[in-house]
Image 1 (tube, rainbow, N blue to C red):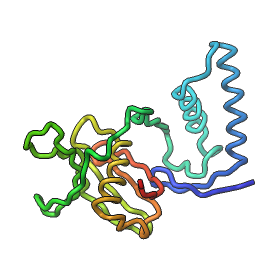
Image 2 (image 1 turned 90 degrees about the horizontal axis):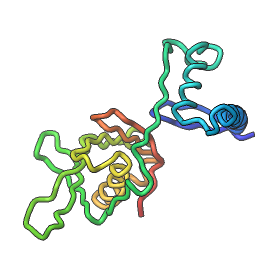
Image 3 (image 1 turned 45 degrees about the vertical axis):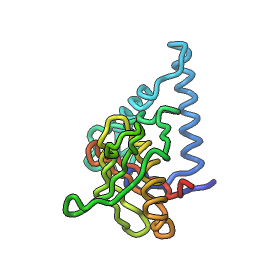
Image 4 (image 1 turned 90 degrees about the vertical axis):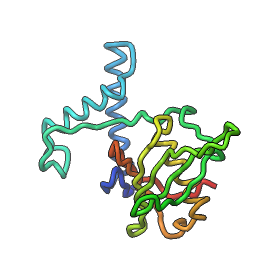
Length: 194
């Protein structure tokens, strides 16, 4: 029976084979109930609603951090779509600008129309700092056609790998991405894109 530590949205926890196997069995029973009644599997929202209902009805029965929990909401980020978040990294570059004080990093989309127009700023990175072995990366999306998943790809490849020349690679194990507008945050293992 393996147990492992994890971090999700800045909160650490422990999970393992037994809780995952038990949840798998419960989900199989729920799927069977939906198939019997509606001839289909439940949606993700239906499963999460059921989990929220159970946990928030008797929180101290199910969780150790129930203090202050009145209603929980589990969100699914469907921002990433297979194939829809592909980004051609060769069309982007990263720079550091001191246009403001303090300065900041920015990812630019290269002008590809053959005109002498300036490159377009697509991601602003005002914070890139190391805390213990975690690289904190706060960013702001400046165009609507860049998703959080694309931003992660571009920040790792064109900023950290190319512009910073992998400076943080041996200093950080994880990157905590924080979208300053939406407050979406997640932690990923720091693995060079190349």
